Image 1 (spheres, rainbow, N blue to C red):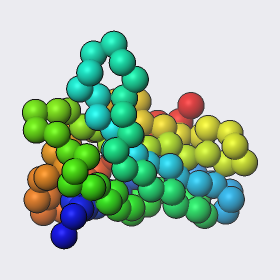
Image 2 (image 1 turned 180 degrees about the vertical axis):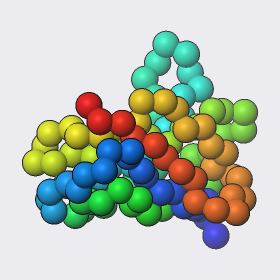
Image 3 (image 1 turned 180 degrees about the horizontal axis):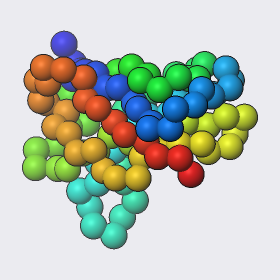
Length: 110
């Protein structure tokens, strides 16, 4: 087994449905280096993301996880290329963690 798996659920608080052609983009990013862009470690794309409570899984290569680094999960939903929802706060995770339930990711409208 050369990967860690992070099960997540993306939510937004607005009580609306999105167009069937909406897409969820999620990523695990290493934010350890100050004054440098985050490094993307794993990604996931879910098409037809028209409802809140979207389950997704990030497959993280074990070789990409570095001891004492800080990792966050970020997500966004786009409809026809237009950003509709995004994470506005960092959801810090340990990619090696053995979470008992899915990690809850909250997105806000833009």
